[in-house]
Each structure stands twice: as C-alpha cells, then as structure tokens.
Length: 359
Image (tube, rainbow, N blue to C red; front, side, top):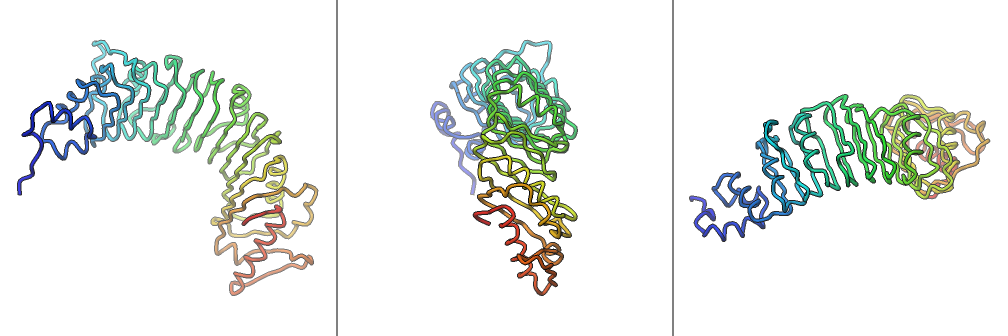
C-alpha cells in the first residue's frame, strides 16, 4: 500500500502542522526535502529548534540568521563549512546552544561561538574534528557549560567571568585550563589531568564555588574544601582533605586495586575524620586480590569517623583471601567453602572501623 503524506494539504496548513513536529517526525509524514521544512520553520519565527538527522550537512549559519531563535539543539549532524569571505551575522537572540555528536573543525567552532555572544547555556558533548576548544570573553552572559569529549589529548581553555556551572569530561586525559571564572558555583570534572596547584588556584580564585565533583582525575593529592559545601570524589587514590568542617555533603567512591593493607583503611579514616558530615562511602574491591587487616588494631590514633551509608562491591578473590582479626584478636582464615562467613566478618570489621549506620 502506498504511504500517504500530508503534501496534499494546503501549504498554510502544512506549515501549521510542521510547527508542532520535530524534524524526525515531520520526515515520516512529508515527502518534501528537509531544507524546505527548515525554511518553513525559520520563516514562521521558530524559537526552539531541535535538529537530529544523521550525517546531514546542516547550514547552521543560515539557521542562526533567524532573529527569533532562542534555543538550538543539534544532534548527529555535520556543520556545513562557511566561506569566510562572507559576513557571518550574529544571533543575539540565542540563549541555549547544544551540539551533540556533531562533526566540525576549530574554525567552525570558534566562528559559531563568536556569532552567539549572548548564549547562557552551551552544551558540547561527544563532538569531533578538532583539538582545541576556547571559550573566551566574547561569551558575555554564559552561565552553564557542559563539555564531554571524545578526542584524545584535547585542550580546553575557558575564560568566562560570568560562568557559574561547569561540567567537563576529558575522555582520555584531556587538558583543562580555567582562568577568570571567579563566579563559578559548581564544578564537575572527570578524566582530566590536573595538579594540586591548579585545583587550589581554582578553588581560591572562585570564592563562590560550593559544589565540587571529581571523578578519575590523576595527580590529585590534596583537596582544599575550605569554601565547599558539597564534595564528591571518585578515584584510585585517597586524597588528603583540608579544612572540611563545613561540608554538608561528602561522598567518596574509591576503586581499589591489587593488595590492600590496614594502612590504606587508616588513610581513609583520616580523610573522613576531617569532616563533620556523615558521608556516603563506596568501596569497589572487584579488582582486589587480597585485603589484609592484620595490623588494623595498631592504627587507632585517629578518631573513628561516622559513616551514614557504606556501599561495598566485593570480588570472589577478596572473599577467599581475607586476613582478619576477630574481636578477641585471633587471626581468622577461611577457605572458599566459608566465603559467606568470611564476608560477614569482613563487613562487621568495616562497620566497626567506620562507625557505620547502614551497609
């Protein structure tokens, strides 16, 4: 049976129907080229445009010429190159620009940002075709930025005094440079190489920073949380926590490898003892081959921290190779047939060690 489209309707009615549809839905009902419906949307003063057509060369600067557009969301497209001999008009009405899975080069990206100086929100996730991203002073009102990379060794430089919220995922160890972001309120970074000095300068230079999330960032040894209210950390190392008495929320997720001894747990206790909040702790032992708490009773100099929730992900190798002490001090070894009892003693020891409410 031949599929019926809405082309037989009057053009004014088609335009009215199309104004309520996404391009994906409209394409199912209409035999007209995409360019035609894009023109219809722009001519009818569209304010919010969501465009998702795989491998489509999108004339984005034609779209941005529309004075009514306030939000533009583009997914899975290639941005059509421009002739730099021609003038590119600024889109002063645009407030949100979102590019996801989009192919473009550095010149295209920089030109695009320059012609959207008044955007408040910028999302740039999983795009490719460049090695550098620069968000500079030309973004006069930017408040929120999210960058999730798929390019290795990508350089991201951000200079935005009005910026309040930043999320950056560096994929495979991207490089991040943040300057003049004194109004930053929340920062969420993952998979990026940053030093203690960089983090300290960022925190001290942003007195309004209250919410910090760090995931799998190497080279961090110490976190100064003197201004923070909320801190979430995920990684392989146990960082030192400096001045954390005012923290209202603390969440630590540690990924544990190889062999762990009592010293490792005591370093974790020191970290938690610097906070008056009752944190949520997640310990992932799935990559561990041994946990030895033999000398645990020798490390009792630090006050026992209170832990609200303790999440533990054990592994079979851990369960069958624990060396624990019972309450009487006698060493306990269990074979694989006693794995459930061994896990019970292990969890009991952890709960006493952290003064845990829930596990």
